[in-house]
Length: 412
Ligand SMILES: Cc1cc2nc3c(=O)[nH]c(=O)nc-3n(C[C@H](O)[C@H](O)[C@H](O)COP(=O)(O)OP(=O)(O)OC[C@H]3O[C@@H](n4cnc5c(N)ncnc54)[C@H](O)[C@@H]3O)c2cc1C
Image 1: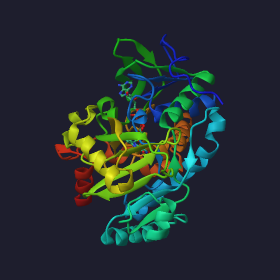
Image 2: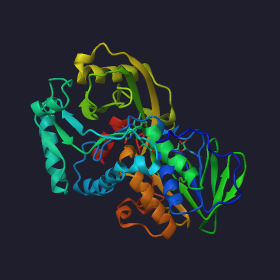
Image 3: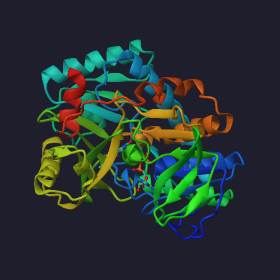
Image 4: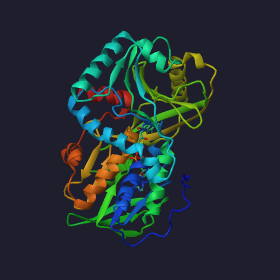
């Protein structure tokens, strides 16, 4: 299998016209473009920076189908319908793209560190099963430690899903991008879209920051955290997240872990190729909406990551943190993605609101391409449509982080 050469086959001469323009060269933009190209459609991807330079190039690589502690049966059903199918598609994807994606089905654990959490997770497993989830299970302390012996012995049990796992997000994104080019499409890094051009309720194309106009009948806004800057009628919330990585920790079994530490949702994962341990989530600073795009990492955030490592894996105290980074993901107003046709503007589509996109990108690429080609919303996307949020003003907190937002959503 080949390695996708980042940038090597990408283009520089922008066309004057293209049937389908995808804005955003992250995992979703590249997946949507790939699925359009696979169906013999003319398509280009326009990316402001490098391919995979947004959240897709900054994430922990966890593929978790029902991430978080959602208790809402309806949203569990909707999410699992998509992520379950995505998991099926991931199995053959390395072969399909001719790129080794370092995808491993390792199982994932959401661990309980207190007795109260044990009860909470048991209850969530019951709700998920009631929603039709046949795979999820609750494991007691001993069983959990058998799966992951280096975890703290303080744990009280875990929610477990065997078919979750891990993937290399760079290879995932570049794998799609490389295949867009192979199938006759084109990818333009360092090309920012300044404006989506419209006339009489119809999309006309896009204008780049260098003033160049590209005519297009169909435009897909796949910029996730930046999508409301181009389509302000739909409020997608940018959300900053940080991660830190240690030197290789070869004794650790590969297994994505979620947990609640000091009242905050945190995660760890092993990078399968190298054995480095990634962690994130603790003590990300609360920032303004504009501040959510800040890619600097601050000292308390690195200290927070160190606390995640030392609390969840106390036996690995000697490992050094070698790097830390920040990135911006996104949330829809219901904590769910927002995917569909933008109301009142024919030919404009949105795919945004992803904060655990690794578990969605293949199926969303497939369904969005179908929607764009047929102009009909496929059944699994109906519940995620933007109509509900169009021109609605939400009163978000002025400063927030992941934790304060979860509390805000729980209250409203
Ligand atoms: C620290 C961190 C850890 C994470 N860990 C995980 C994890 O373990 N598992 C998981 O499933 N998810 C994780 N996520 C979330 C995941 O990364 C996202 O859900 C996913 O990458 C979203 O992909 P995307 O293509 O929609 O967005 P992005 O990758 O952000 O792509 C959007 C692209 O649009 C470009 N763009 C913006 N404006 C314009 C414009 N005007 N013109 C042209 N281009 C533009 C941006 O430069 C960007 O490249 C994490 C995120 C972060 C930040």
